[in-house]
Amino acid sequence: AQQEWTYSGPGLVESDWPKDYPDCGGQKQSPINLQARLVRFNRSLKPLTLKGYEDDNLEFSMTNNGHTVQIALPPTMQITDSEGTVFRAIQMHLHWGGGFFELSGSEHTIDGIRRVIEAHFVHFNSKYGSYDEARNQSDGLAVVAVLMEIDEYAENTNYSPIISELLNIQYPGEITTLTNINIQDLFPGDTRHYFVYKGSLTTPPCTENVKWFVFQDSVKLSKAQVLKLENTIKNKNNETLHNIYRQTQPLNQRVVEANFP
Ligand code: SG7
Ligand code: ZN
Image (cartoon, rainbow, N blue to C red):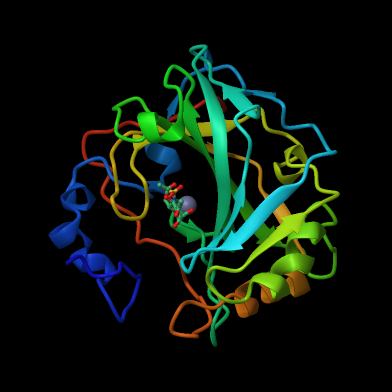
């Protein structure tokens, strides 16, 4: 029987993921350190086109799945990449740090610096009929990553609907409904510039079929908003979820591109 995966235990700890999930030991894993010196500037990469994201009359379910908080997104929300490939949304979730030392908890780092929070918007290639069909295809997935930082006292009201519902999903399996939220507003104001590379899911099964887009610009949350996220959500052992990010993985033969110098 497979043990439940975790970051630091009890259960299958990060360094042991490859024992039960062989792809986690692969050569194209995520996250990575985005090292400016090694990034290839490609001026022909166009900005992502977002469609269906701006609709603000929708309701979304948000759940605590024991590993993170996750918001279900409809397939009508889609991104088109520079090559014209259309990816449909399935969900967004967050990675954070916290704990006694108030550590940062993003998954990607930039020149070795970890940001406070990282949001992942998971998409599947629209040439497949559903996420389940796409999930094991080599060109199946795309994840758009938003890095977040602290702006001490400035509440980010775009994120307030999420933060204020967290108390209703403290425990794994709990589910709540978000209203009055605009998903496009969860992205940075300027989404033109991004890093792009080929990698994997950052959790088991670590499938190496993810086209990663990491926006250059970050989003800012107030200190109070960050602390509420870091200190509210519990796992199934009734422990507060802290530092739910994977260590950066070797770049190996890959090249990271960016559409900004
Ligand atoms: C989070 O990250 C969850 C997972 C997600 C995983 O733990 O949101 O989603 C579910 C449905 O549990 O796994 C397959 C999948 O989306 C890895 O996603 S990530 O690579 O973007 N971090
Ligand atoms: Zn993630």
